[in-house]
Image (cartoon, rainbow, N blue to C red; front, side, top):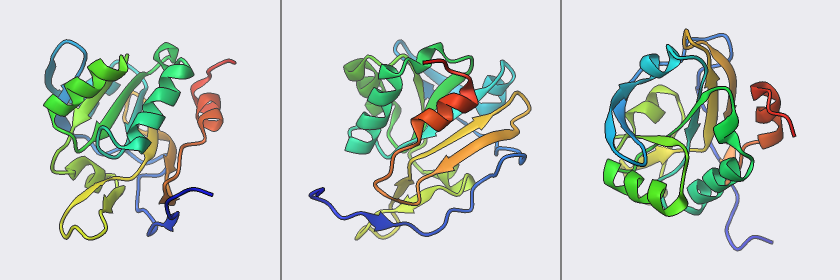
Length: 170
C-alpha cells in the first residue's frame, strides 16, 4: 500500500486528437543555456512531445523523466520537451543533476497548463497550481496526434502506449 492517498482529479478540458494545440512562448532551458522559444517554432521542425509534470524535484517529475531517459526517448523522431512551473534556474539544476537529454519550458505562472486544461490546484494553497502529469504529441502544424492526461493523483503515463504512438521499437 502506498503511504499517500490516491485522489481522483476533476475532469480535464484538454486538447483532443485532431484539435490544434495552443501555441505559447516561454523560456526553454537546456543543459547549456535558456532562451525564449515557442511551440510553433519547435513544431516547424517536426513532431513535438510535450510532457507536463509537477515542479522539478517532486517525485512525479523525477520518476517521469528518469523513466523517459531509461526508455531512450532521446532517440525518438520528435522533439521531447517538458513543461512545468519551475523557474529557469530550477530547471537548469534539474537538467544538470539528472543528466537530462531533454529541454524544459519554464512556466512559473502555470499559464501553459491552464491553456491546455491540465492545471491542478494544490490542496490547501489558494491560488497556487501546477500541471498535472500529461503528455501531448503534436505534429508540425500543432495538431494533437495523441493526448494522455492524469485522471488521479498520482498517476503515470502509459509509456508503452506512447511508444507505440511514437514508433519506438523495443
